[in-house]
Image (cartoon, rainbow, N blue to C red):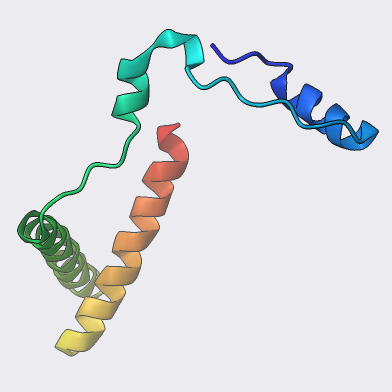
Length: 102
């Protein structure tokens, strides 16, 4: 575990004009934990497949929400209106779920 007084020591050193103490190079001697934090490079193909799948899910859910609201309120919206209202509802529900998930 990192020393919890480390930040205070660094700030006091700056305030008093002393040299800033160095951070410990090896935190708790656990190299495996440091290696897990390194960035993992993914291939372009995997990235585009993953992001395309996410985009497909958002678009399809938005269209379904839009058609559901159209049927619920018996309105006469065109496809762009259905998609727009569904997208708004999709984002609203996503934000609500993230707020109450914690």
